[in-house]
Image (tube, rainbow over all chains, first blue to last red; front, side):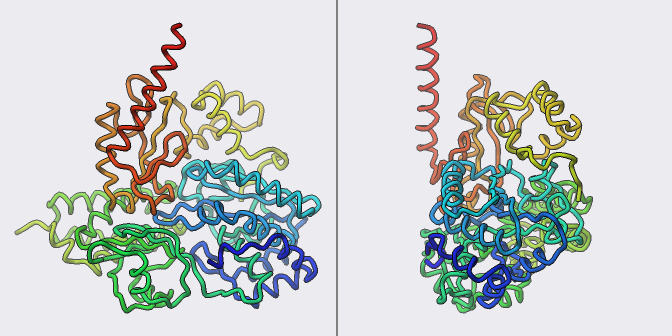
Length: 374
Length: 155
């Protein structure tokens, strides 16, 4: 796996000889995109932060890997944390930051003692004057994976999402320019700087659900679905796959080549390439129901459409599952999901209807199975 | 974005709250008042923060906090069965503490153990590939440890 290649502080050394601008230019040349889900060009983010006028800048590593079905960052923290920390130091060097933070989700707290050791070790060896890395402990809020909510949490507030613009890249922690990168992005940054043969098309896939071989796999973009299914080894015929909770549910097509475009064509979103496989023994409505429960639980409560709408969607799904729903309820669900997406502030609200919309579109028969017989 | 005066060089509030909870098992009103004075944060704001994060508790908790994962991968792998079993076994529902004060039961969103589903956290440590049989063994072990400790105290 490319993600496990170690850079042993040689990447940082190379970045120092290239200078901040040279480092950013190299990252741009290598074509590194954010791996948290939005695929924003990393070099562009770093440059914007560097160019924003300020007396202080910050680097934040987003280790709040909360998307259900995603566990690739855990693999990196466990098996290549040194490279991750080095990536943070390179980012700090490139944008001119001194204070860095790792926002580690509360559910991964058992990884913290070892991570802290590695942070201390790399910092001692890197000898970057005045640069510090603090681990901030999350406490179970999914929304804190969203950039603005995460910053609120680091500053000691409720993890409510904030209006953008201004973007955190120019107005982040305490109003200062702040680079927020995902764990995988930062580890990749160190590798991209050091290795000439670094491949920008490789992505980590978190595979789980009704398969015998779940786990984290590395595939290039454009990989055929049949290849993924071969390694995942489902016991029964696969019917559907859900991209985390937010990305929507779509049918499994063995001949599909997996790229953002082909996934978008089915009205789904790839995010961090977490695929939860669902086999033919399960009803997609049941999965949609567990996703809807997740959203009622995790909505931060700031915007009314998301706070109230997620509860209404769950109630409608409950109605479907108890066989009390009629056609009009499905229409209502679709309308509600679309409204929330159009009116919510942050990524959570804008995607919390995806599972409803895509499952209604792709799996009408699963809904039919529950419909009231008239 | 909201600014905080003179807070720049202090430790993150989240870490402080975690440490208080680790020491006392929960974050009491008394502790909140103390942090409020020490850190110069209005108590209402502080309470708002504590209540926002599901991992912070303002009431005493059982000695073992069990958090069952309720996300799709675990649900697809028989997670619901474990939940029902646990509720029966310890005699407390989700969000409640057992009468003997040993176990508090919670449902959590994905804990990132989807490749080893179904999974749960017991006092923050992951327990994966759970079955009813394995769960029985773990609960027995915890109860035995408790009984042994109680026995030693009596002596």
